[in-house]
Image (cartoon, rainbow, N blue to C red):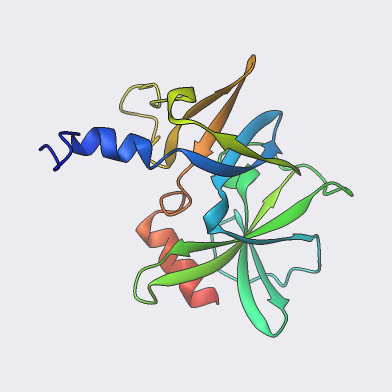
Length: 170
């Protein structure tokens, strides 16, 4: 379907991917989250475990009087767990939730890198890896010099069922 300017919905969606991204490392790979979804970056702090949650849900933190669920992106993406160090931090993001509309959550990452401005022409669609591998949470692949950064759609990183776990935990 063409819009008033003659652009298709697919072209419109691609141009929406352009912008500033907070980049971070996870298991030797570089990822990016749209800067508008990021609320703050904090150092590691005590995390209170919540029973009967998925293994990637580390628990909850008290951030200035607000209880926020924390997930370890390494575990969510099937990577091996590593001990946290001085570079490990929590990126607090606001994602689209279910009933609540928006849900704040913390993402444990290996290290935060930088904020980069990524242009539309530097973003390629996610390659298809077959039907067994879920990639709907990947916005695209950003070319930055010789490197590739995986751009995440934070609203889709968690499934509906996982999001309901988080909303109950908070």
